[in-house]
Length: 115
Length: 117
View 1 (cartoon, rainbow over the protein chains, first blue to last red):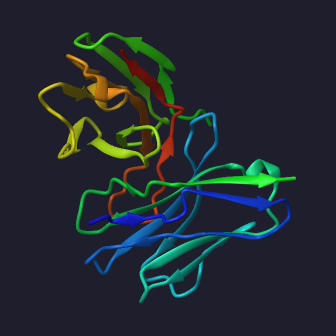
View 2: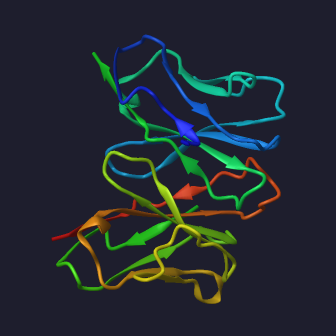
């Protein structure tokens, strides 16, 4: 079974609109961490935001926020006021307490911001 | 602060040849990861080092892939012999390495794009 599922292969969004990128995960661990990374065409993975399984509040980092619904095992990324520079691949990833601490990634969502 | 350095950026080889990639992590980062990212997919962990010891290599195809991290700093990943399906971007990442801290982020290099023909 997929550990991380991102159901949107691609999205087109108008500049300045908010966008939600979906991520669902599968784990039997009680302690885990969820990450979102951005990968522009240059190839480097850029860390955006982190949510711990025991965090009671949704994480926020500037224009990025994470809509964490633990019971539904979802961790959607919300980008407010999108910008042209937000066009990139976005990956959701998980670290589980029970395993080694390498990240397990989803297949990603290709986000294109249109002017 | 200098980021994770990788070289080369691009490599084209014929199948059955060998190839090596180099990674220099961020200074002071004890944990180093190698990921394989096939086109259209997310990165897949190949191997994780803590200092110069291997923590996880469960997804490394050990019949053809090898990796080492001498002196707990730089690392090399080797493929011998290469197959067509090894065409991918190979990403190196490093972190402070506190596996007890779930929120420890990994910093990635720009990757090496390997094409096997």
